[in-house]
Length: 458
RNA sequence: GGCUGGGUGGCAGAAUGGUCAUGCUGCGGACUGCAAAUCCGCCUACGCCGGUUCGAUUCCGGCCUCAGCCUCCA
Image 1 (cartoon, rainbow, N blue to C red):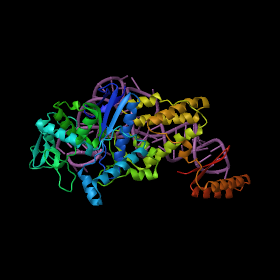
Image 2 (cartoon, rainbow, N blue to C red; image 1 turned 45 degrees about the horizontal axis):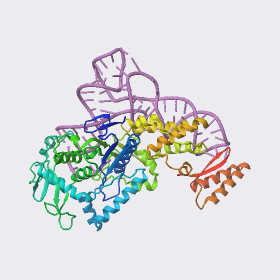
Image 3 (spheres, chains in turn orange, red; image 1 turned 120 degrees about the horizontal axis):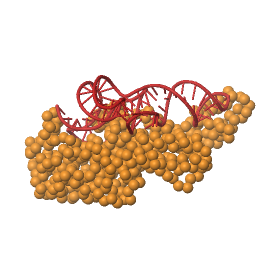
């Protein structure tokens, strides 16, 4: 049985899908107007990990994660770059998917785009107006927060007690200060769609209510996203969807809310307003995606993750040692992989990836020191378990730099021959000098009883 | 002001009412001409004050403190 923490109930309990054979999960995806940052990546990797774990237990899992391709930030960005909206969104959607793939994130089963669901949003807004949960004012449509009796059940805050020191945007034509926009008018130079309220575009929250219901039906099992979306985004989604259906129970929309913690940079939350953004695109230039993924999984998903260069390098070292164990036992053939029970137990306990990783590292250590017979079992378990985390999917020799390609190979091998001869001649000064030269070429020498091996230092 | 979630050894980071997390680093050793890689061993911890208990890092209460949300944000 899989245990999961539910933000809605603030406790951890056994996960039971509505349909025992089919788990339905929706995650709020990125707004595509710029490169994905490491915080976006954490959400994508954590959700990918959740889905991998669910798939190991349930027959059928449908994972939906949207692309927000209509938003004022996109409009601004298009203006600034003098490009069409569609050029911006198509470009960054593609880059997002490519970057996430580098981190071992498998594509969602569906990736709905907000602009493809405008009619669904309009229909939902109409339902809300009909149910007296929304009203038209000043060419806008607003959701009326007091229409939702259970408003605040996800975030633990009521609209009222927020007002004191809060910075809520006050518009004169709102009936309640907490009311928020469902539909707003568009100028000629802004993207707009025909609607019963004139040409306009949707507000931020309605798209997820519309897309999740359209793709998965209600109620679905898990709604995921970054912790900063709890309020107001997810709170407002619940309010909209519940008021549209007339069922005010918050879990009549999504049964379980799964939120990941933030990525911190030097002790501060990475955020657009602070400008301390670290892009995945830049990281993958210099580091293997697998190391970035493992670093993102090195803390429990609900905890904040302090991202540092040291974390990434330490993780890489740790990963290298696991690949060493596999390389050392390359001659051991296994028929099929196997997932270690301890690893599975850790993951089934609210996706405890740090604990799972500690068991995987132990398996690598056991493999490295085992005799050939034991090694077979450890190797099968190491690969099977690591693969469930999206790790150890590369060729060990290649990962470690032993695969000897490149135009300098013959030069390198000649230098190594010369060095070996120098060693035979006990001319260690010459041998060490050759090793220095090789090191400067990015080549590391490893002497062993069976001869000298070399690898590219990476 | 309201609402969340934290405070663990040099760093990262889990579990747990009484025994080991784990990784990286550091130190000692083995191996090696020296390296590299590998192996063996070792050190350092549970924010503060009370309470419950035979026993608390773990449960309860108070305090201090950090981070986040209440504005775009994963």
